[in-house]
Image 1 (spheres, rainbow, N blue to C red):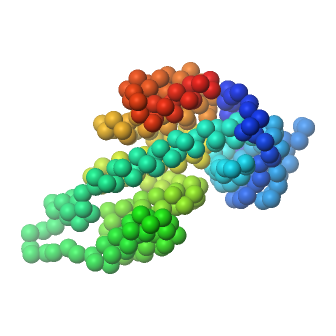
Image 2 (image 1 turned 180 degrees about the vertical axis):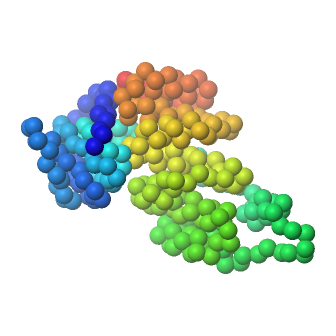
Length: 289
């Protein structure tokens, strides 16, 4: 198994690392280093502060610590202190990203006009009228449930929308919203699993939200290399989005221990987005370096 050691320059704070981290869920393998050997962990086991552990290939591990939960999907060797402290620092950024996505949704065009516009060139001029009432009803119901913070119910509606989708365009739209609902419910690993191989259609009305959501989920799940690659492929013109993506790219480099690269990205956020929340978070990261 090919492993990578993630080293993060951190100032250890006793106020943050105060209790052992508990393994909540395992799909695959997680092992802790005990002297010169590796010992497999099971759900319910603790990872003491100062420990080193490794995650196997194709594994998903969910951990919980003091007031926080986080998931790991990238194989490699980790320091628990680095992971816990990095998770605490990313909480504010995670909240900011979701607020940005919500802001973008307020300016979306109607779903029907967007979908029909994209399909116009594909439909023959023979009096054909496209209509998928079931899909629209399920999708709209899910959006209402999202606004009401009923994420479980929203997920059911979006799953029903996927089942009644007319074509790939609709299915991908429902998939995005399902992943978004899972992310809002706190199931970041499940949300990422849904859209791991998902690339949003640039013509989709939710395109910027989907790019930002996936970038955030990759960083939140410590898939730093994939996050950097994803962000590099989808540069935006919207300054609000660009600032958020550069911040996430800095956080991903920070996770990988590429401190100078991360610093440069954080400084870019501060320079290009003066007074914004993303600039404030970037400043906080620089303060820890």
